[in-house]
Length: 350
Image (cartoon, rainbow, N blue to C red; front, side):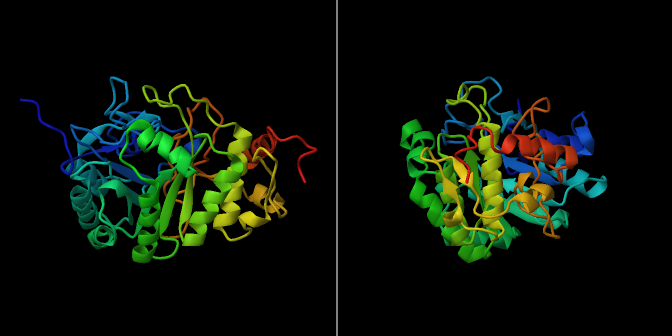
């Protein structure tokens, strides 16, 4: 009889996390370290959502549907084995993120897993939530009581129309734009100002202006934003959809950083008629030299530095790096400079 590998006894972890624990073979280039251990709930029946870009979607057409997600392999292990290795091996982790899927058992199992992680490690814990299967503030308080100090909510799409097209009725999915934003507001109330992260994906069909506006909306509500670059998942409805241009992504990265850090507001930025960002409203040179804007954005460690660095989660190792899992070095900064204004004519820039 084949054992059913389901949460809470079993979880998936990213290939980077598995390599860091010695569960998978491999090594990282440029001395990269995976500093967040991601634990993803898993069920034989899968996620009941059908998001058009997701490797976990129930309508995905791929043989390895349970094994890949956000571009990379996510192998399944027992939670006990993972936690034992965290306790007994040297590792680079500075945070654990327990990620829900849209499944009826996910809320209860997430609390169980977070509680186990808290009991067996001294690492801070985030919960990546699935609002569609949650009941508002009571469930958020349960996540917090279990041991999470932060939560993330993957809204992903920048506009209600794109959300509906790729996550809602357009793909016969259960998610609703208004409910997700209400969960953001409730989470800020329960967890506190800047203890909630809103995930956004650049490249689902939005303009740069629309993306900047939704980043600003989250910031005004007291939530930070964590940026992803669209990657076409094999077997998904969007497998032939193009990735965003590097210039497009670099401008949004910089805008997100400036807004999240309170350096500038969206109202001070300027856009072309087609929505491309043409002026940031401030001298960007200090932030270009610093390079922090172009790192992976995610939950921090106890010292306030990004822990959820997701190595190669947005690109293959052979492709230009979109989210740097380390502080960009001088040669990286020069490359970023050459990419920043791709697609914007010099006479459009202010």
